[in-house]
Image (cartoon, rainbow, N blue to C red; front, side, top):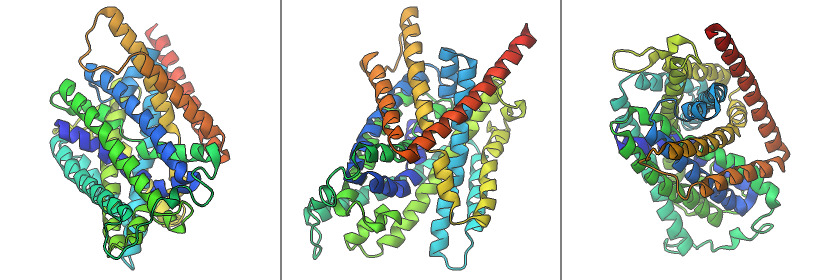
Length: 443
């Protein structure tokens, strides 16, 4: 794959349910102060991406941060992070398919949500079983479409706010401070919005996983990371700023779709249909990219003896087909859930993956600090470096700790954090037992 494939795969993974659907819940949780949630999480992502880029440029591998954690902190930690990220992605894959199927079902009378989810999962399984080059090109054009849609949305939003739309009164800035003020729920609301926002940003780290499949990792990783950083600022923070300026934070329309609601307020004809199609494309693009990332991670785990060896086998095209099928298996299980519980399965899936990104990012930050110090001690010159090391790396770690503290202020978020901690401990204990067993066999 080329640099443009890496950039759009990263954006394709991140721009999905979290932004188009979850941002509405974030706004309702924090009010206009959700902008602070996005700024905090955005800063966090930019720093983490830079650190991952440093490690990926020095050692491009499909195991990415799992491998780096293993090198820095030991095999059990690397194994735990690899499996945690894989579990997060397979749940997200099911969530993306569920959300896309629900939207299409609402637009297509008589259609069955579970049937549509089955079609989507099957289609993208077939795409991922093809060659890497064709997959990268497909994802590039798929992601480009939704990025263009966001650019058009931003242009219409700015024109609406500025009063440039004919016969449509400008909303002004009252929604930023009205209805209880800028921070109606205080810092606990910002904390509640943070995990929803973190989920929206989750997936950008896939660029580090894809480094192993690019033609010139050192150069392309640097280009991809730099490009993703400024796109995050424009697409995420820009979109949310437009939405909270146009609509009151407590508007019921936000729960059904913040982008559609904002365009409807601007009196854009057919906005609901157009945005519904764009959102479906966005969700399916994210599904496609996440399936790629999940399959490469479990393939790397299998290569290192941390997953069944069968998952390390590659087909004639170089694609780890068994890893792809294992990663999509839960998606097919979600089809059954769509049939049984079509109204509740999406929210259940979103709640499960709420805070696992924080663990992955935290371990990645610590790994970068350790590996960078080792490289400097050994006199190794890195081609792509973290800014202002070690100060910004420590700042990122402190910022992550602050996000966790804010999250604990909200009862619902606290439950998610504790659930993620419990899952991480279970995976860590299993990885430790496996490592001890292998040590005894070697001894």
